[in-house]
Image: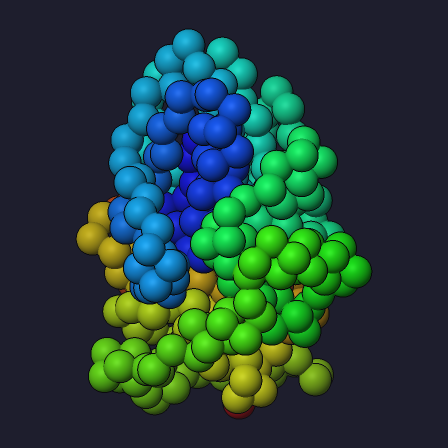
Length: 297
């Protein structure tokens, strides 16, 4: 199975739960991802005593399950060979990946919710540590259930009945911010530019790391949409977050214009452009925002 590069908590929990289900049912598995898990996902795995070895997998003559991934560029070079069939499980509305079998539900706030529903319907009951990881991802992806519906709460209740603790999940998410995290937040705020159209405020900044955290903090400051640009060796990435605004279509359009790949779901999306400079992508982002009628504040 494969997840997007530098898998976040949602991708990690989804793959761990599905892998556990398949392993218990006698299936041989390989977990593919380019790069290490995000800092919060790595911390969660360490705290729970879980070990996940992501790497490169050969999908030849196998069934490939792709989780929480909207575009092919997000897979990087983690998957080789041609699978006999491809299964997609995801919650991103804007995407350019397709499979022979698809479970795609943009109304779900997370992929892990879909994986939990699917495996639960098959009679699978994860052990308490994996249940805790699943609950942690549900809590994190929904902003402590602010974006949760009945299905999310039902999935969370199921994990609690299996031994997970909501209190422990909150404690793990409320991790202490270290120096590098604080510096990223400060840099992001100091470099931020804002553009306004009516009641909507588009915010743009540049940092070296902790992009999702910075984008989330910008929303807390009052931005309707937050875009964080960062340089990653051979590509420039844009992480977008919003409150009620469709930013996936904006980043997808930017991807087509720049030769990159962009997409995601309405309030959380990303763009990756290979061989570009940060300034070029930043300029394109600002032009795209201005084309929506926004002006500098």
